[in-house]
Length: 106
Image 1: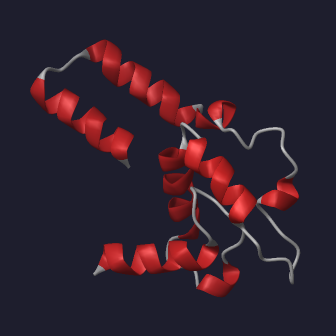
Image 2: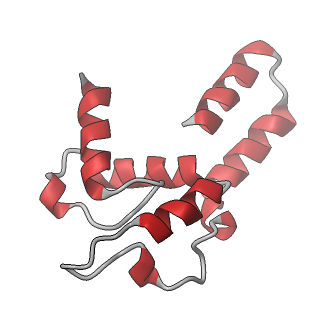
């Protein structure tokens, strides 16, 4: 989200083509820069019954692509009930993403 806003303001203001291209590349290749890449997926996608998200939250707080990850999760889950959302993505839990989406739509 923050990157998207920065890219939009640079397009409108100064029109720096290089910055826009760099932003677009980062957005489409954000997975490569994620701190979770290569870690145990169970940290972010628990089996039922195991719900402590603190370790995932700590990793996401330091990740440079959390905004892109959250944008991707929200896009994939648009309009989906909270019970069908899965995993800790974009620095927040499925329940937090559902609340965020409802607030954003209001």
